Image 1 (cartoon, helix red, strand yellow):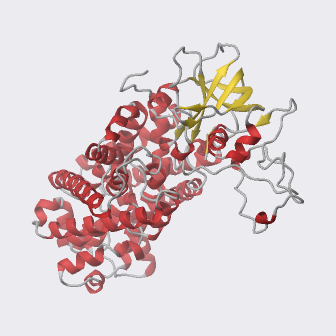
Image 2 (cartoon, rainbow over the protein chains, first blue to last red):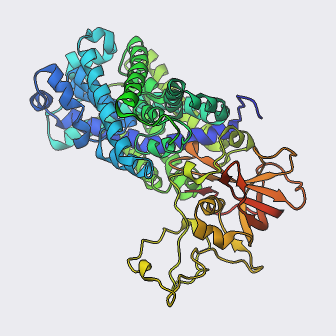
Image 3 (cartoon, rainbow over the protein chains, first blue to last red):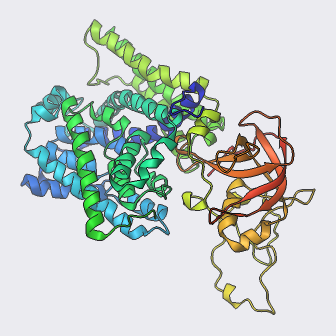
Length: 313
Length: 288
């Protein structure tokens, strides 16, 4: 004890199991919705709902979380299914990044967690920055060839929706429900593999790394922002509750807490692995680095524009 | 054959996950893992997974996109099932439902209530309400502001015991670790505890700070926001009457005098002349 790293297997098991217990219900919910979308959503529905202009589509997709709120664990199987239903990948990625933050549940939890620490400002900034970042990333992805973004199997699903279990919109209700179950179970098992590895990585960090090692970083805005984004990626918190953790970092500057709140629901260890089920590895690496830089820069820029407190809150 | 194997593997994985989730809930182990808000979600998911596993077995038309079509994919299916079931069962059987000393040491101790915004202060008591009703003051919802509270005058003074700290048979005030952190910031609450005999339960650790001679200890309780992975140790410093011969993380009952000295310009709780005795863990080992 007392060093920077100390592994204890029972403690690791305890943290690992707690992350699984917390995340599995949301992952299951996401895959159930994914199965229902597959069987009951017409492929033309998405193209009718969203503007034809891809940039306008990204702007609207970033707000879909207000109507269809979903946490980060469950959103990936949904966007995979939505892409197979005709949602352009750029819009799907915008929804994937924005929905876990830009939704009423997260707004309320952030406001509640930051009571006494300018809750309205933090809540508005969190939702606003997440929306802007998601739209910017979505628009950037629109200019990339699909083969650089999606895994070959996902591209095949988009090109030939019948390759998925049930193309949707066909057969009676019972047939569709059985099909939805097949899709749900298949997605749940696929995503769970990545979730298990992500939870293990998060539990390892959570129990083995001395968290006081990162405290000296709080003295510098840039270092503090980078450190809290890295911490958000390793803690793998749920977006509906991470504000309660962020609010406890009283010695960290406000900008760094904002970066934690925006970056965490977009990138964490388990999400990186879950993203790998849909996106190419090189794209995932680029997405993580791009989001790290973009969120960091936007938050630091906001510090200048809105004179966010440099001192600890 | 591949199809039958795949169907049984899928159902097997689902039923193992569902059973673990349900078992955690019905055995009560889940209270150490999840905040009460999330516990029904885990039960619901567990039941759904068990139902799905049965449906996968009985459904005549289930054709999954990942259904194996070759020997190689059957091997992949078996490996997938092992990856999904193995770590879960290993963790389920090895977890001790609590953290050890090394993990506690790796986390930053909370010694200032502003670092714990998710916590709720203990209940205030109205003049007509009995003070010693609750055995767990921190678990009581805080009283709502009373419209008539501003009308208290010299003829109708505020009650002497504003906070509901129950007393033990020996006359000690029973409080939770987190209550002392609140009391350091709330003068009314501090007045109820300061220089009075108190009793508090927690886990024993050597003090991390303000301990130059190595003779101070911290009484620790873990405060959970969502799940055990995010739990933070809340620490109450104790100057013991006699050095305890107990292992780290032993559950202890500390009786002593509550004080609130100013350290480094900040008022901090401190139990002086503390008698530290081994005790059984409380029913809820975590604070929420």
